[in-house]
Image: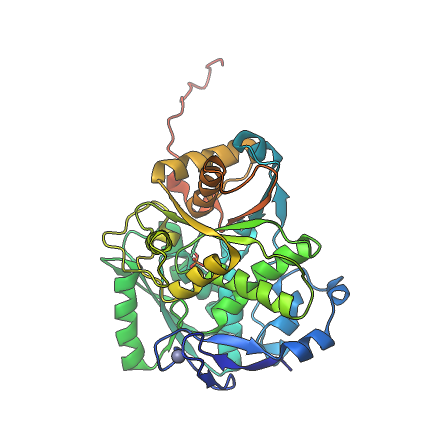
Length: 399
Ligand SMILES: *Cc1c(COP(=O)(O)O)cnc(C)c1O
Ligand SMILES: [Zn+2]
């Protein structure tokens, strides 16, 4: 049994039945899962969570499955939040935290979206899934799809990280490389979807990936003992993570589990692909396609996100901001976090760290504020990020 009421369009407010397969609203907007929050709030309380399984399925009541037997799990979620005192001292923060999504199966937080997305697809009787990806979503969905016994078709930019390609190949997904961006891969997948009847699991084209990523927000609240931090920084590509965290916080607020002001939601992008930052600076409600997108942080190289208006809404509503950082700042942050905290983080997470530094310098963030940075993936997925120039010794050499 679930507490799902319906699927709802955040743009035109049309509603759809969650027992049927749906992609976008007829108006073209992504759909959001709406719950009967009153009933949900009566059915469970905070204390019930203690002792539950240490993955994202501990928040069962906030998730869209009807039957537990449909769960497809590889152990995703409930990642630790580390106090980053060494790094905080260097940057000038008194209370800096890093939530390490690199510890998820497949090495990124994409596992959350894939776990809930594939589980729900299984419950709805879907047998074949197709999607474009910058790399990490493909790896995650291929893995969960393999576990569920589904036929997976993935298309990604030819310059996506090798490891992401290998994850798709090793788990048996039909994998295509596209001479272009994720947006070009998306157009090719859309044709295949029409032709072969595959289920289109592109970012935000199905409603359940957000529900998986929403659990990051539920975890932040629970792990901070329901006393929310002042700011959450998120490296933003398609925006599912930031939309999901914001959705979680609003659901928790609605059932009274959290009180007071919500954290400032902060979107961090790369200078070479910053459509959300541009839109925010212009005070716009939607972004425009970012021409010539280029950055080493492939997961946030999304020139135009379908859910851009939801990302911007969360930023405006929370009093947050959007900021961009250069590839040089990203590379420097990878090194700095590894050197001070022993964490080899992904370039996207490093962008968020560099963003925090920038906002502290600009005075938007204050040294005493409690600041949470999402590291969305493991640096181990980006071995090419660190250049080697090491001394090679003779066997008898002394050092
Ligand atoms: C996909 C991805 C992002 C961007 O996530 P969105 O929720 O789509 O904005 C950030 N970091 C990594 C490592 C990713 O794979
Ligand atoms: Zn609509």
